Length: 165
Image (tube, rainbow, N blue to C red; front, side, top):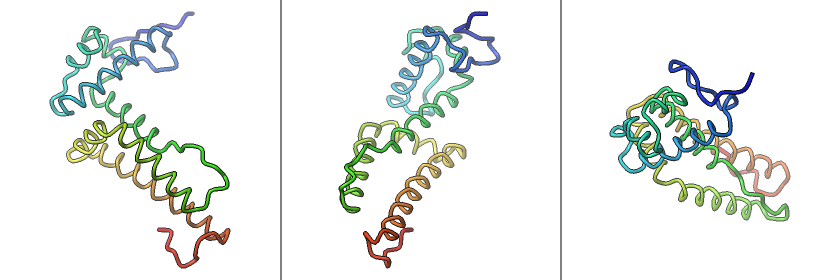
């Protein structure tokens, strides 16, 4: 049985069941949603706006996503994955240089994603799910930095009196 790029109206297709054409349409919807969210904000975005921006029918949106919240959740997840992605660093760098490189990478990612980050912050003010998503993102960054400092302390590269938390 061949894969279908469409699904029943009540159940959006999962990414792994999409054809190449279906993935292309889904990606176009994600790109369009990001543009619309960044332009008019989350509260004023309607599924109709996203469909128009993607040049697809209103019903096509629902073949891939259940709601604007679902498409926003996926965009937010991708955003935080990008924010957490670490650029490879030279193993000969000192802890301070590694920290600077890591912060620089984060800053560059933040700049690339600033408009969407602003929308995530906006949504987190009134939506508990997105507030928790934002908090989890921050917890991951703090935990990663704390683990690095603790590791450097064990290796004798930074003072033991530095509080990693």
